[in-house]
Length: 295
Image (cartoon, rainbow, N blue to C red):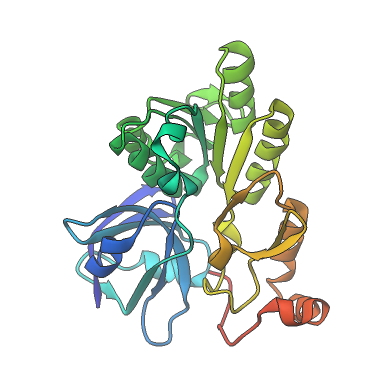
């Protein structure tokens, strides 16, 4: 059993848990994810890593209780545990392996949307721990949905909070804030890393392409099985077929076909849709007995 050492409610239906998993904590890096299984018959739930401590042997996960499995997971308390906690999986952030002399030259902006703030945090923390200063935008619909602001403030040079309704921080979406920083405050960025809802990442990439800023996105929102077996996270990146869980989850945002991914995500929610995808894609579908459902 992988014990839950800490549980915290960050926002309505958004929860943080510290899990005792020393073997996972020993090997994980920013950008990777784990698969959680509550019991023997439970669904496999892929969740990006929010934080980790090799010394304490803990891995922090953040999740939103939307479907039946994550709602059930939200009912777990400290002292209880999960049957399986598998990882780390996926590729680590490209920043981890970038030559220090090249990384020092870059001005980097992280853009976090909603629950996407959780996977952004370990990357910003890694940058801080290695002597690099970065900016970060945290965006949400309203003040109640802003998470990890204080934690991000301890590791980022500047944290810019924005809400769609203006209830906290800057009024507008993350794109409005990027425009304000670039056009009104004269900020220059060489790299943007955006993590959040697919529609948010799509429009961030449209803007950054116009601004000429290289952009990396994390396609973890489309993952279901987490091993490449179900075919749910199949996407097109620069005219090549990729799978978010095994080839990513991070990709060049200017090469991702977001419209295809959003349409596919909707189709995958029904048996009929999955059948159509399997017939259309043949051996590239990578379907298997993964027991996929709505998390």
